[in-house]
Length: 524
Image (cartoon, rainbow, N blue to C red):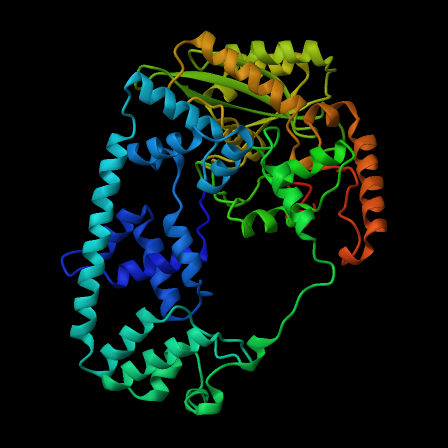
């Protein structure tokens, strides 16, 4: 699935491409960043047209410092293990959130050190080489800038590289004192190198009269910066600390705020909204990225299907589970109910076969008491999905097959989203499965958790089992009453109505444009 890059990443990528060494080209920079050559050239063209909203220096620094748990060096892993030796469980959970890892990573690293494993030595070595390359490019960048400061064109190019963001030529913007001083310094440097002030101001996104006004003694800073503002409905320090304490408890250590809030609501506890949790955790640097991948973009869908209740539309697919032999895999067959998101059936085999898929569907129909003409089964165009045995079995069971478009891999979003959740669980083994029995035990535990404990964002954060049996209506009604009571106690803290907790109605699979609300078709 496609990856959505942040504006800060695009800006940093453009800067690296423009400041590359003389012996490298844009394709080398694209390979180093892990993006396509055409994508990087498009970003450069957009940057020259000032189409980006420039990120702050703090955001760029934060992005460059974030890394995945598997990118930690042996020295860094050993250091955090020593730190955790003298901490209690709650303090360890807080340290893990701040460091961008899960508690089970520390336990796994401790086991690896005891067993004498060195799984991250290659990563550490490659990371050091990458850092040396970046440092080398940074040194060459400074030399290139001095060489280009001989004419107006070269001076304007240096100004564009050094400027943090384009101000958009909008009047009345609030610009901090430090940024104002930096802008003046950059423009003076460009003028000293031979550039005209008017052209330098266009690169920054300011009017030349603004720069002239800044140079007066009584206009050295923006007077709006001295204004002291605080919202009247701000949480007290005690309430903020309570949210941090709850987020770092063992029960919620591995959960994001959008999972913690509904679980607390089911217990009759309301501390704040999901956005309040995110804002407070971010303010205390406890909201670092801890997952392995980045969120994916939405894709176009084929012919629309709609489910108004359980056991109407099923979607299924097959995914690979790694084995100890490179190139060989176990195959996980998994069937999901689109309306409730419940996993209604699964099996792990050592090969792909339409006959095995047909047997799985026969078992599901018996267990769920499926009648003829009741269910539509959607899948992609894989050979097991179109096999003669599978199609004959579906015809015998009275199930209508639905297939994705040829050569389109994103027309089965619910199954793809389910597999993404499965493979990015904290408990998912970093190594391969030893045998098929081990893989079946792990999948059985995952399905039990997913159906009975996981609060699914696509169905208003109730579990798939609750949605499948109709218990979500009463649960969401109880949450509504709780939110209304919380708003009645502190109405000044609510800028509008409470969040929409009405049960999700019809669910669409690959809806036509404009036929369904985006919230109802959200797959993840």
